[in-house]
Amino acid sequence: MPRSLNNLKFTKMIRVFSVAVFMFAQCVFAQVNVDGIIAVVGNNIVLKSDVEQQILQYQAQGLEVDSSMRTQVFEELLFQKLMLHKAEIDSVEVTENEVSNEVESRVNTFVTQLGSEEQLEAYFGKKIYEIRTEMFEPIRESLIIKRVRYGITSSVDVTPGQVRDYFTSFDKDVLPEINETVEVAQLLKLPPANESAIRETNSKLNKLKERVLKGESFATLAILYSEDPGSSRNGGLYTGIRRGMFVKEFEAVMFSLEDNEVSEVFETDYGYHIAQMVERRTDEVDIRHILMSPKISPIDLNDAKDLLFSVRDSILDGNLTFETATAQHSDDKNTKYNGGKLINNNTGATTFELHELENAIKIAVEDLEVGAISEPAYVKMEDGKEAYRVFKLLRRTPAHQVNFKDDYKMIRDMALEQKKEEAVEKWIENTLLKSYVYIADSYRSEYFQYQW
Image 1 (cartoon, rainbow, N blue to C red):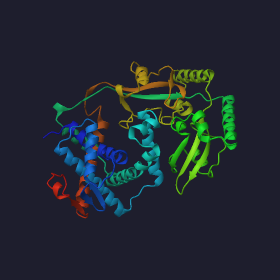
Image 2 (cartoon, helix red, strand yellow):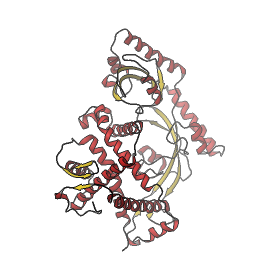
Image 3 (spheres, rainbow, N blue to C red):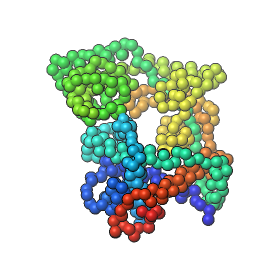
C-alpha cells in the first residue's frame, strides 16, 4: 500500500519531540514522587508519573491522546532508558561543560520566549538557579541519549536510487502542498562606540568600584546602575555558576576572584563589567556583576547606515560579493561566515515560509526579486542594541506539490531518517536480547512495537 508522507513526518516528530520535551518536563515541571515503578530497564526506572507528565506535555501542544498514543509514550520512555542502560555499559559520557552550555542555551531560549528571567521564575515558581540546577541531570541524560543514538545511526546513508525508490513508494494523490519558501541572507552592522563613550563607561564603573571598596553595597549599586536585565533587579547576582555557562571573558575574571573581591573593569561582547565574588564552592560560584554599555550616539548610528549604503553600492556595481561583504563587515556572528544566510531555528535549514520570518524581515524581502538587496533598515535588537542591516533574497520557491526535482533534499532527508529509524529498530531488537527489562503486570497487556 502506498505510504503517506504526512504520517512519516508525524512518526519522526514523535520520536524527536518526545526526547526533547520529556527531558524538559522532567527538569522543570515534574515533582518526583515514588508513585509506582511501572518499568525497569537495566538500572533505570520508569515511574507512572513520567508517563502522565509526558501525556500532559503532548496535550499542552494540542495533540489528542488516545490509548495508542499513551502506549507509544510509554514505549518511547522505555527506549530512552534502554539507551541510558547501554551508555552505562559502554561508558558513554558527556562533560560537565557540555551539559552546562546546553543548560544555559535552554535557559536563554526560555528567557527570550517569556521576556525576562523574572518572568521565567514567575512562570515556574522557582528561582533561576533552581531551574538551572533541576535541568542539569535530565539534560545530561538527554545528551547521552543523543550520543548513543548518533553511534547507532552515524554510518547510515542513502544512495540517489534509494531516495527515488522511497519517493515512488508514496501515493501520488495525497502528496502534500509545500508553501512558498524563501532563502534570505543578511548583513548586520552594529555601530562601534567612539573612544569618548568607552572612556566615560570605564570611568563610571571605576567610580562604582571605589564606592564598593568604601563600604557601599554592590547589590544596591547593581540594582541602580546595571544594564543587565537578567540580574540587575536581583542585585546583579548569579548563583550556582559552573565553567562553560558564561562567555569565556567573563569566566576568566569570575574564577580568578577571591571571596568578596571586586574585579577591575573588563570587556565582553555584552559591554563592560565589574564583578564581585560572593561565594566560591568546589565546582561553582555565586557572583554579582554590574554591566554598562558605551552609549551609541546618533552620529555613530548614522555612520553604520552610511557604511551599509556604501557596501551595498559596491555589491550592486559588481566590485564586491555579498558573501565577501558579510565576512568583512557583518557583526552577526551566527551568519558572518556562511554568506549571511539566516538559519530557520524550527528546521535547522536555510529556508523559511514567509510567516516564519521576523515581521521586519518579511516586509523587507517579500517584494524583492531574487538576487536583489534591500536598502539599510534600522533594527533594535533583543538586547537593546541598535543597528542597521540589509537583506539579499537568495532564492524563492513558489508553492507547489512535493516533487522529486524541486524537493530532492527534503525527500532525501526523509529517506535517510527512515533508514536511521530502521537501524534504531534493529539496535533495539538486538539490545533487548541482552538487557534486563521489567514491565509491571498492569502494563504488560499494552500493544508494544518491540518485545520488551
